[in-house]
Length: 280
Image 1 (cartoon, rainbow, N blue to C red):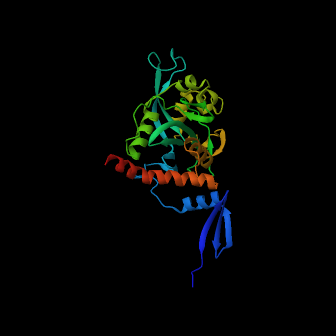
Image 2: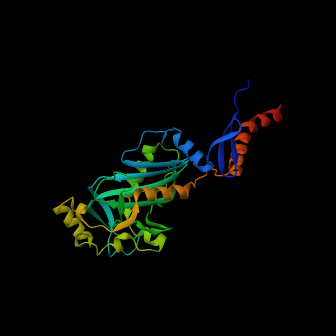
Image 3: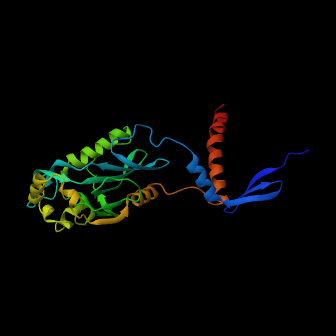
């Protein structure tokens, strides 16, 4: 007695499970493959998770990290209002101590390297879930650019991050953001006013650097009580958009698309053998 025949049939954008020549169930190919992908386990990162990473999204070589810095007072070099130059040689700076709320940086990588897609936000509470909202900052070096409302300028970070372990990548980014000068590089690169200019009228305590520093001396946690302007997006939305930009979803949704994937896999498997036979 022959055992019952069981097979999968793929036609168009549908997958059908057939038992004894009778269809049992069917579903969209894209949905089946997405479920299969979600059930596969893999290491999110090959190294230890860097300090301060709150969320991580990954698709192949693309990685998007959400970094969160706790409220604190930072000593920074900030461009003076009367600086003769907006950046570089000839620019003049204050060295000031400024209180900050929770600072969230979302950074997209590909192959371990920066992609130029990164944003910076404020929050008055720590991140808890992907639906948490974000606020726009009041910082130099942050301006709207390329569809990124809070684009963070990292152009002066020239270190090649690709070969570094992940904790060192993040350390390099943090040291650059807080150790470099705060100037008008973002204004010049984007043609837009930085958020330091945009937010000057938001609250008297951050209207000037002198006021900001004075408010810091009085209460180092005052930024947690400032009504920062809402960005309108959640942390999950920002990360998903960055991931789709750096690495658009590539799961096939039709039989033709799956056939191309099978062909690619077959060529990768058979190719070296064929090349080996030609060398003999």
